[in-house]
Length: 226
Image 1 (cartoon, rainbow, N blue to C red):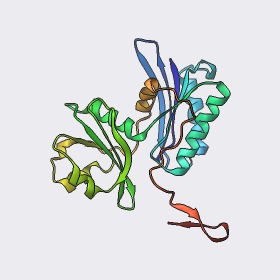
Image 2 (cartoon, rainbow, N blue to C red):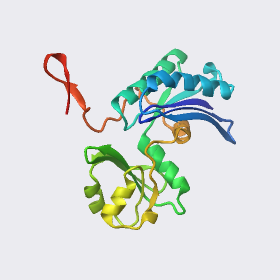
Image 3 (tube, rainbow, N blue to C red):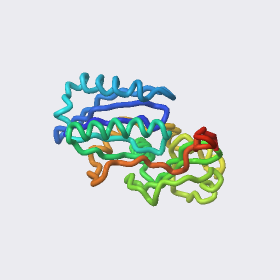
Image 4 (cartoon, rainbow, N blue to C red):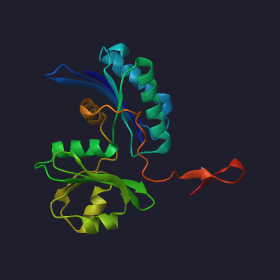
């Protein structure tokens, strides 16, 4: 299998080509922390990883895209490009979430696999979060919560990962050893790895929006901030 993975969900902009011959996997990837400007940079990164991996577009078996949670603008960029490649190449487009990729990376690095809660800073005193079991399978849906609420509901076995993990640990008064990492974004390598096993979908992937946008239409077509 050969696949192209794309991530423009958060501040990072990344692309990767994963090649799996049935025995070993090889990943060629690029990642930059841009903040903004994903639309201007992502196509150059795609071209670079395709060239560096000696991969032609026609040889790809699928396209993988991070569907969030993330920024509204960033998610639209990545999804538009992934859908475009899928349409032109007549290849399936599959989705991976930011939270799942962070969970799997943290579990692979943890000394002992345990249920894990991934918590990302969503600003406005809120966090994006989702629980996963020790294999990385999701438990329940991704959601918006607060550090305080998560601290109150945290059980004694669950470990933590993500940019707001330490804040939850502090609020819960638990040992810092239960915090696996403070990742603020998903690893493109893990997005590619999860994309290899992702189920094909009947419909095109949709962005994982967990709350309304910051900008909404105002009077006379103007945009106001909530």
